[in-house]
Image (cartoon, rainbow, N blue to C red; front, side):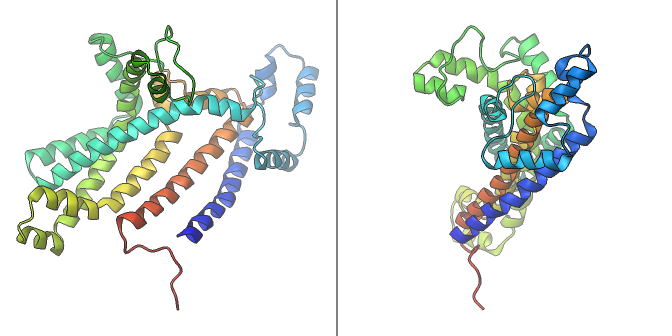
Length: 338
């Protein structure tokens, strides 16, 4: 197992290098010239040329990439063209907000998705099954931004139950320990900040979780239907084991592998793809920030975020593979003997 993990970690290096090359070329070839955007439309050609020369944009593209790669290998992803702050600091200042949103969303999606999927499989072709599949169809079909707008209109604009934007009330001053407001408020023992941060999190997390919940529901139902038809399930029922234990202890546990795969991939996609949700709810994460940087041609920030997202996807795949071995003892990653 350890050798397999080390091998997968080493495979992360060429993947990230390939991703960095692609995003580097795309930003340089297809993005507009950042000089007039950074300096302003009224900047002279001489000033723009001097700025490009100062940050190395006039160097050959292979030399620009080489300088970028050398810095990235030492943890230096460059400096934002606009804020003059290192990209690593810019990302780390906003990434906790995205992680908090994505983790809460995947927890909601997993709990409701697995529950609805199990009920749909056990009550196959019943009204519960039809309702669950209809909900899954709606979740897959409805755009996130549209669902977010509907939630804002209903729960914020009409019922006035929940706030519609931000992470916490601007008048509150939450403690800054980890960057995760829910955890920081618990550490500080401030129940008011915790409740307010949780209220701000409900709507964006619900909107972000809907699509993932639909995917998990479908996969759970399919996996459970396959498992419930196996011989060991019939044997367990013949022994008089309680139905609840048969479903959750035997069937669900044996059907978890494809479900875990979906959950892991969905978490990776939520961390990197919460752009629309963060934009609709004015959530101060890296998604909305990256869109702004793309429009401004802030090359270093966009490259840094893409590398981070790629690393998250690869690591999530590794974590899922390791979890497989714990869920199913038959899965071994050691090299087979000849």
